[in-house]
Image: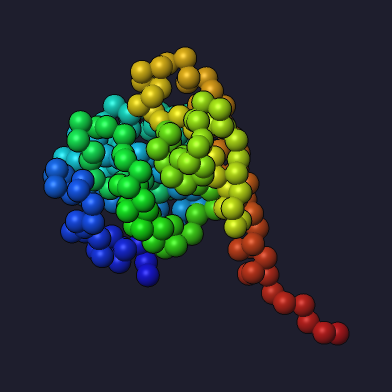
Length: 201
């Protein structure tokens, strides 16, 4: 199933109570075949109105961080652990994340990323370690079944705690380097595939 089909399947999702308060479901956006996937916590008010992830103040900061790391936003895929806005922008509950992980799992299968970056505590607990503390494990790589995963601070946290921007920038430099390495590897594989086969003499 391709990504568009996944999004159509869940366009009217009512699997958890969050659907009752949403204006629009926010599936995510970006390159449907990107090797780099960002997963945030949940839509805010701006995202709920527009149906797009990371378009408010936190999204503007994320855009600046991606630009500084020379990673075009349109070349990656960005989504959230829950697709509907939690009331008052509260942190998603465990049961809400568990329910919504069904959608994320299908998105993951369709995109097939090789790098997964969790933005904030909620997706880090849901996808990496339920006991994780973001301040302790941010910037570390974890690998599962060939996919490298790194937690880093959510841009909204950085707006409230500007001192964390230095650490976040270190994380984004590591993300940039890993992303570039994958792109270079992919280009090399493509070039090799186009080389003519040797002929027997």
